[in-house]
Image (cartoon, rainbow, N blue to C red; front, side, top):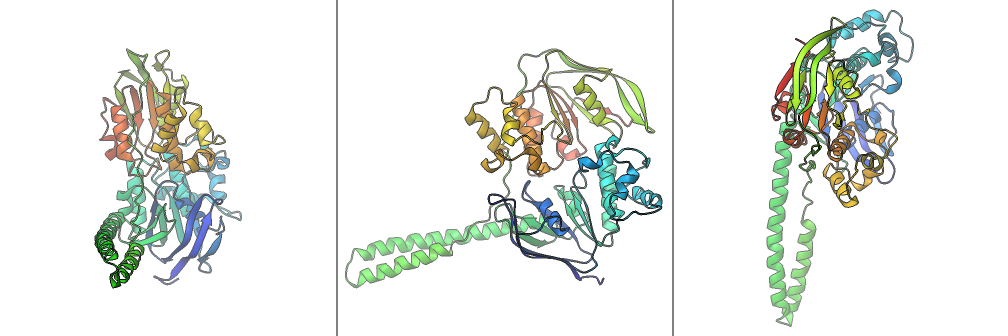
Length: 483
């Protein structure tokens, strides 16, 4: 396959999930051999759907998706499918191939080294941490040695070392890849083009350069469109005033007035629709449970994973209202396990004060019932919200009327995250536990979320691998499970 040759082509591709959920409208773009492209857009715009169409897991409603003959494609999804979680590492990698691969172990060793993960091949996938599962997903695509590599939010759950390792791999990668990510700095390290899926027009817009170049181009375009419309508006007003003046003169002047009104109509049609930008969520506050005080959480000991074994360590942490604990550590050190044990009450060395309401944001969204509609999910925690306040709050998190009746399981991962935040606002917890709350979330929303967390009045435990996000939140305690 020669460099620069087109290997994937979307030709006027349209796709919708039913009549009221359009995703693509005559999308047109091509991908050349050796290119590294970012696919970006608002949460729920349909980026993952573009991947599904590319691998023929979905069929377009119209138009064609063409892959060059012999081109192989592998995709790493955002999360490992639930039906694969009970497989061993060896079975998981074997499932990537249609036919049985004999002597697969050396190939597994090779790709695990690429993603910097040491794993027993007989270990069950479910027993790995979120960050380790993210590395397994990436490795499952690489092991297929595809001509086209599709990565859907590959940095989610990865620690700092994991992101650096992945970035280095993609910089050196010789084949073709498309990456979906909301991490602009990560994307800009290796991509040289952007495919932007506009959530309003459902078009895919190709741009040369990185995401910051795209933002400059869009801003310049909006400025040009606004300037053109302002000039036309001024001319339209002048012509209207002249037309009214001549219309009252009678005789031949009425004909002049008529022509001026026709010109006004022409200029109205010349106005351009100014490009709409991605919406951001509205500023919000997570109210704190009112009837609590004193010590809310006490941690005297905790478990960490070291050399694949659980090790007990002592601590002396006492958290009261307005105090925050940052939980850090490399992937697999036991952060999520510790949070789960605190919430469930099974942590031997951690005790939550009686009567304290816990708001828990899980990185896998397993606190949500995927069979519930969004309305049902929010109603289950909206104890004292009026219908008007309920819908206003939902709209603030971009949960619009067309989403409110959708099942949780049908939402994008980013939309599930916004629903989870809306639920926390309605719950009014005294203890807020957040496990990687930036995963899947459009980076435009992150400063608003950070501000809300910084203003929270209760006790908070936070896990996040995004330093820029953490820096916006006042932290009182840091517990590093890697030390």
